[in-house]
Image (cartoon, rainbow, N blue to C red):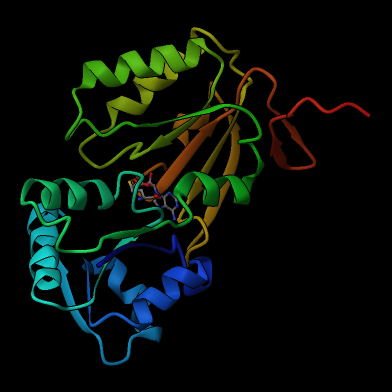
Length: 242
Ligand code: SAH
């Protein structure tokens, strides 16, 4: 069984290993919105799709199929080990003592931070901190603590799950915290649907980026104190001189 990173956009963004794993699987298990990305390469594989909030059910089903002898590929968008399915699969398998029985490999993919960074220029050239603003599975107090620590330590910040229809305040709070440590003109890159159809990007700054149409298909990259915008590209210097 393999937990495979696909996308984040088209087939061409996945690694050759991910591609081959999908091609040779008997069953593909995944969130239905992402399964359509695979349509062009699917042949005889059985496809099991479930909705967004059915993660545990989906992983359990995948383990059962694998235990029955099928070659299963669980697909996750971006990297399966970054807010993806890899951890849950391993936890469930370990708890059910299935790890000796089922060989589970994790096939990495291009995470949204990398995809977004590539669209913006080179904003992740220095130490970075990835923080999800979703408080569905993480207490909001802990998210605030991490935002504060990362902002104070001058990490480049990458915000996942930045804003949804229901969750609109979190991004404003994040902005307020970072403003305590960085100037209002710190570059902020916002990328929606990075490397996917409908890709959009904006290079803004810390004091104004929250006015942009940020949603759950968006990744936000807040520069560190050295990040600059040059010729329309967001760049965090590594420190080379010439
Ligand atoms: N496993 C995924 C992350 C899942 S969390 C990965 O490694 O990328 C979901 C969040 O990731 C979204 O709310 C968004 O913030 C970000 N994201 C995923 N794909 C994206 C894309 N193509 N463009 C911009 N942001 C994306």
